[in-house]
Structure formats: C-alpha cells, structure tokens
Amino acid sequence: MELSFEVMLGGWIATGLTLFILSFLYEDNPLFKLAEHLYVGVSLGYTIVKTYDTVVMTLILRPILEKGEWSLLVPVVIGTLMLTRYVPKAAWLSRYAFAFIVGVGAGLAIPRTISSFILKQIEDTVRPLLTLVPGEGVTFTYSLLNPASNLNGIIILIGVVSVLFYFFFSVEHSGPGKMVARAGIVFLMISFGAAFGYTVMARMSLLIGRLTDLIEFSDASYGRPTLWLSLLTIGTLIWLSRRSGAHPPER
Amino acid sequence: MIALRRQLPLLITMVTGLVMAGQYYVPHPASEQLLTTVTKWLQIIGGFALVLGITSLFHVHAAKIRRKEAGWGYSLMLYAGMLGTIVVGLWNGGKESIDGAMTSFGWVYSYTLVPLQGTMFAILAFFIASAAYRSFRARSREAAVLLIAAVIVMMGRVPLGEYLLPISGDLSSWILNVLNASVRRAILIGVSLGAVALSFKIIFGVERSYLGGGKE
Image 1 (cartoon, rainbow over the protein chains, first blue to last red):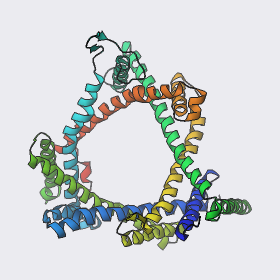
Image 2 (image 1 turned 90 degrees about the vertical axis):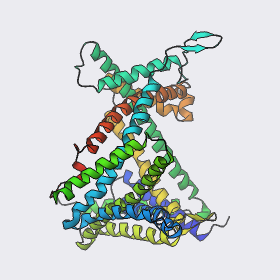
Image 3 (image 1 turned 180 degrees about the vertical axis):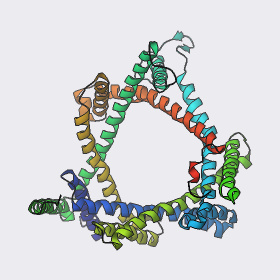
Image 4 (image 1 turned 45 degrees about the vertical axis):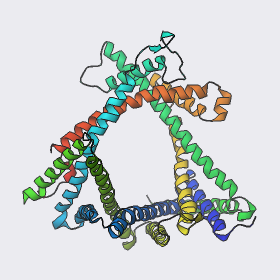
C-alpha cells in the first residue's frame, strides 16, 4: 500500500521522538533533552491554541459579535486585571481578580463538597448490616466479589473508620485505639500498594502503545524508520559516551 | 487607599462566596442561570491566568537565549515547537480534523504530541519499577502488605497474571473495589472536611494568603 508523504514523515518523526525519549533509560543525553524541550514547546503551543479556540473564540468573541452578549466583557475585564501583575504600581488591582476567583471557588465548594464528598460518602459507608429480602426474610450476603454485599459493607466500614481514626491526632493512639490505628495502617498500605500496581500497569499499557507504534513504523512501507533511527540513536549515544570519556567533565 | 487595596478584595471574596454557596440552596431558574453564567466567567478568567503562566515561561527561556546560557539551544527548540504549533493551530482554526480529514494541526498532535507524551509517561514505568525494587524489599510487615497488594493488582490486570494465578483477577477487583475504596473514601472525607473549613476561612477573611504580600 502506497502511503502519503505526510503519513510517512509522521512515522519518521514519531519514531525519532519516541527513541530520543527512550534513550534516557541509558543516561541523560542531548537527544533526550531535545525531545523533552520540544515536548514542552509543542504541548504549550497546543494548550494556547485550544484555549484561544475555546475561550477567546467560543466563549468571548462569537457570543459577543453574534448574540450581543456584552455582559461577557465583565469576566474579560476581571481577567485583564490579572495581567496588572506586570505593572508594579498597579499590581494590587490583580487582587480583585483573585478575590473573585477564590470567592466563587470557596462558595461553590462548601455545599457541593459537604453533599457529595462528606454526606454521600458517609451514607454509602453506613449501610444496613443485614438485608431484608421479600420472601426470604433477613439475610446476610457473604460474596466478596460483590462490593455491595453485607460482608464487604462491614469491611468498608472498618476500613473507613480505622483510616479516619489513624489521621485523628487529638486522641492518643494507645490501648484499643492503637489497634484501630494499626488496622488503619494496614488498610492504607493495601491501598498504596493497589495504587502503585495500578499506576505501573497504566504506564505499561502506554509503553505497549509506543512499542506497537515502533513495530508498525518498522514496516518497509514507511521506509523502516524504526531500524534506521534506532541505529542513529545508538550511534549517537556511543559517540557521546566516547566524547565524554575523552573529555571528562570538569569538577 | 488601604480600603481599595485590601478590604475591597476581601469584601468581593465574601460576597461572591456567600452568593455562590447560597445559590446551591435556591432551586430557581434564575439561580441555575447564575451558576451557568459564573461557571462560564470562571472559564474565561482562567484563560487569562494561562497568559500569566505562559509569559513567565517565555521570560525564563528568552533570558537563557539572550545570555547564551548553557543549553540555550534547547530553549530555542522549545520556542520553535511552541510557535510552530501555534501557527499551524491558528491556521486550522484549532481543529485537528475537518470533515474527517486530518489537518496539519491534527498531524502535529498525532505525530508529535502523542508520541512525546506517551513515551514520556511510559518511561516512568521503568523508574517506578526500579524505585520499587530498591525500596519495596519487605523490611516490615506494612511494607510486605504493600508489596503483596501491588503484586496482586499487577497480576490481576494482565492475562498472563490471571493465567499464572487464576484467583488474582477476582482478588485484584476486591482489593480495588472494597479495600482501596474504603481508604479512598476515608481520605476523601478527611480532605473534604479540610476543604470546607478552608473555604469558610477564606470567605470570612481569616485566610488571606491568596491576596499575596506586598504593599497594603
């Protein structure tokens, strides 16, 4: 299959950048630094363009010019006040912008946080220990695989209470309290371990994605960029390594 | 002047905070409209905040290039990447594809940003694994619990793990959905209580650090 020039060029660039970043696994080197700075630049440029499109065009200019929503000039003025930070004599004006953002944020946070993150979480934690099933009477479900089972409900309750107690420093963790706090530590350790394992596997899936691309770009239809650029990267690393060996860095 | 510089911002925070907190308890179309409008306003103001951050980065690298400091070429590369992406992005109206066809901005995204971002995060897998090897050696019972939970979750997420240890899939789900959920819930409750307390302190002017220092 004949590939277009853009796709082929894209394959070469994507392969080169992937290999340059991976070269960091050997040691910090100019190829990695080049790709790293390009990453910052491109992602910054991308963010600027997206912000321009969503904020300036979609939220400000189009509504004002097409629908006459002149009230949108108010947030524009507030936002502009932020930029007074660059004028030392007028920098205090930026406080109005920050005051507005922080005030709105705090006001929005109070009822929503209480409702969703405190009351709802407590409601889901303090569940009936037994279930009333019509026709069967009162039952206790043991299934560990069902997070809504009665057994899991008790485990979750113990976990939440013990972890909260572990972080509650107004009471000395001694006697029965010490036992509860230790249970909290065990729950925390399991959670940290799970978070670690989950993160590692997420990174691994990203790595698999990159390796899949490298395999795809090793195809002859792309001109085998993976092969040639791997040789180039390895060659450059060897050359850099020899050069730094010949000229050790000054202490 | 102090009233304008210090007290008026505190008053703005208090009024906006109380109004937005009260909005939640007023089930009226006007109240909903207020929330929609203010959310849109916050998005617009957030765009200006981005300008602050970007100009700061711009200055740092511009100074590096001007003074020809070590590694100034990389700063030049950063500028080239950023300006190139901006020009291409604006040329295409910020669209990655138009009528299903990939634009040059979409090309930059697919063949530059995606590989760079993906690889940058992927190499962290190696560093996490190496850090784990050095620090996870089960020196205490707690460390052993952490290690075992991590291994089970890792095994439960891949077919090979489930093949080697058939129970790992179910065990991994149980750890994530029950044990991990209970800890996350406890932490969420604790953090939320702190956030609510901080919000009250901000609204009533007890916490003022967001106004910055400098002259009154």
